[in-house]
Image (tube, rainbow, N blue to C red; front, side, top):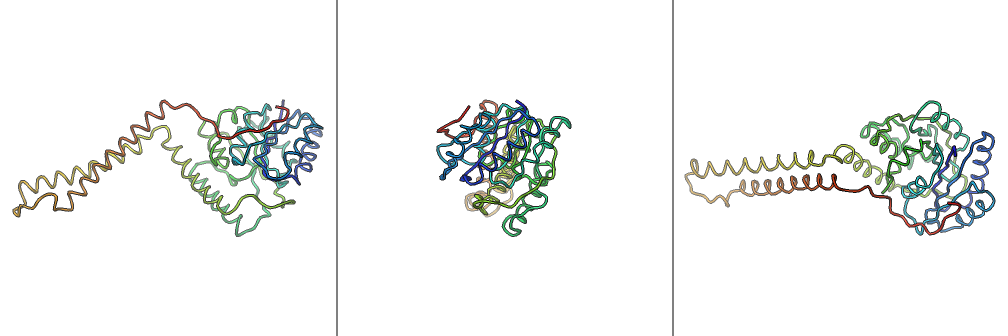
Length: 316
């Protein structure tokens, strides 16, 4: 199979039939062998009924239904697990991503040799205050932190080589950082293509302002995992040793001062430096042990998977 189109969705019943017709027309005009995998992330409307209807008419349509809403990352993880195509396309179900972009994305993967090609919605039809400006700030921070030079990390329209999506694990809310996860796994040939962004036709966005806060928190997480995930002792051990040395320095000073310099005979416990020394050495020891335990866990852990529960499947 040449292509797998993976589409996570939540309450998008109005757009699904139109999106399917559009994708099928593009696939057939370009003579692709393909599958379309819809992942219903716990929708409360009739999205699953629409998917069932589409699948009954076309064996290329496949579906996964989550028991409840687990999030976009888990939906993509489940779709990647089932995808069989040599090239995997991801896109949103709200008709804001154009299937007309798919042939060029496929060409960039197959002919230009990219591991990933990410869409860039250079011209957007979203609110400037609530989406455009926060998105620009978020993307700037993501570029600086991750070292992946993409203009639009949030764009849902992306193309991947099959081995990329089978290697990485998308969990939590890390779907924004799939290119970063891929780079960390050794897939560094990452390209970008300007794509058409269309105004939402049905319903309303499922993402609020909190997604940007979550995005920045996830960015800090992925920065830490990238830099110290394989060597936690380099961070916690270094901080622990530094704190312990600071505490030991105060303790040494107090000991010398008590024995040779202090004529008043004050108790060491009456001096604030004693508590600074004690606290610093305790914290230093704890940080060092945290790094040591982190090293043990890192060397012994098994790769996990995204947590989700599938209640129904179609054609899988």
